[in-house]
Length: 397
Image (cartoon, rainbow, N blue to C red; front, side):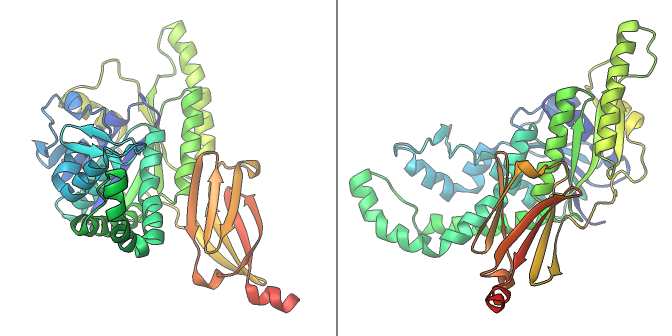
């Protein structure tokens, strides 16, 4: 069986961890070697399964292991040269470097090391399925766009990196009392960059990685789930399922709960109308908190009986080029985006797409070097950008 990664995200408090845990239990029952990973600093896998989880892989049942990742420990233990280099920079004004024990971290980069660890676990081939319980949506989106963003920056600046480091090191020491990376650190940065490229390849491959959205039938959660789906498509991640958690039965025998149930049905209908191309699974409300293996198994039995749970289809046409008269068009699926929300800019061979605070820079193929962007429109849930090739512009002149 080919290994797969399943990433669970959603607004805080919607039940991502319990949903991911139920998936992991179902997977282990099938005899697949399964790892359930928490990439959320507010870890609670140990609480759900009532076991000790201390940053090490712990087998808690046949074929089922859990791991709570600590990016600071990963930084110190697996990237010592980078940790030392950042520590040497920690006294420099304005860099905002944090020290946690013996680890140093630039704010915003800490979760990158959790992703790199997940990459290593996948490449080890030890697990057939890896389930990742992520932080709330905003942090998850920041996390998932990080490999592509950092890869872009490293690719642009790495050719001059070593030269500039050698040239500036004496000045940095004398004037700013700053120690720049040495050759060992630069080598480790280079290895990390290569890992980033492989990580990006793994995360963007729909045959390997799937994202699953978890939500509850509430107004603010519905809106955030719609936006998350839009942004995940912008960054070219394969979303294959939506799970609506804590759904009340239609008739509860209590007037207040029945009214609440009717309100939930309105939001469920809205979610199902938005996600028409995705399977939507309803998870019933459980009167008791999900704690302990028995409770997780109950959730698994009550909501995750779908025989195709781990093999749901995904769209393959999220991003593609089409020849048009005089050039090409690029189509990027961004369901839910509106024309006035989207800003597009062309910088040489990079196309920047901005929606609110999220920006994705797409490297364009060499054939579009010197091309002119002539139009961009939202059509049927996709952004279509048109380019006219240089030779066609010159011919028209």
